[in-house]
Length: 341
Image (cartoon, rainbow, N blue to C red):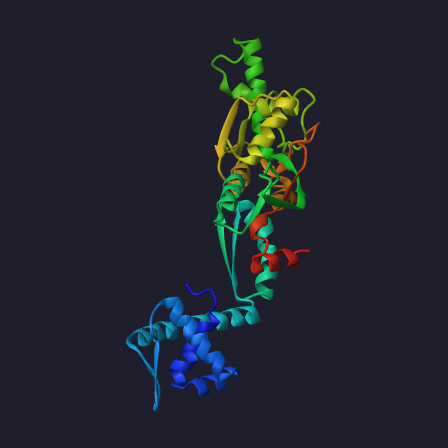
């Protein structure tokens, strides 16, 4: 390929005007400069491109072939330049974002709303995966930006903390109440196996008797909202139906490290692949769920879920945006990162 594309531009002007002098006028250069440029191009390609006569310039067969291709090439360049200009004027671009469903729903949406309002012509696409999958997609160049939970990252990825989040354990008052009844019954049965033999009703809340010996139902008690001194939170977590995000998840790894440090050994764990489902499962009384407190504010606010009072809270962590340093020059990515500051 010719290093100096200006030779092609000069030849194109000569081919279109069929005149050295008119080509020189169009390009604002001298006639000798036009002739020299065409000669250099012919020497480089080892062909004759034009023939001079008293009637002007005539293209050879090789010249006609080159002219046709140059027309298409320069038109493509012109089109590309025009599209780039329009994209710059309108802010047209593309931004590919990766995030988990929960992070997308609870954090990303508010940022996207402002971004789309400001840049309506930027195409935004979102893929919902776990933090580890999002990091892998960033490394592979399949997305431009990731919203992830704090984790170890390769040096080539940049992490910008966005906000702190807190893991907690939530449960319905009803599940906790029934859980206590079952555990107390199990303990009594272990101590006195003959006591409950053939008498299932004795496991329920006892009835009282009036002075005449007739049975009188005990008044309904308020739901359990605090732990009895006889059972610790650690014991509840070890004996209850504990619902956690599936293994390999960054959040699950964080919790397992916490369990290890606190010497908590859960006995019955239900793996769930979605934080929102953990909240929903807890609300229908399936067990105790580990959730991000900031994502369960509605359920905690209306009392449908309560927190287990952890004597030692799970250490807080952060959520933030992550991107490849090599893709920081992406105009759409730069606009998004600049907007959130």
